[in-house]
Image (cartoon, rainbow, N blue to C red):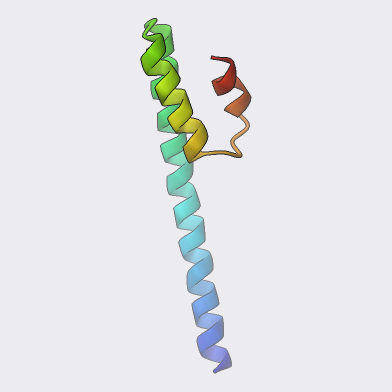
Length: 69
């Protein structure tokens, strides 16, 4: 029983690390897309994309920048 619990715990850790890396990549893509839209003066599109970024990565340190833009 202990071996099964340990194996399941290890698999959950690996899945969480992989999921976190995917989320970081997605957050980076969302922020870059929003920043590009802002630089192109597509402000409504940029605002929507920044909101998407903040929803996808609520604890990202760039959230203050996203709120500013």
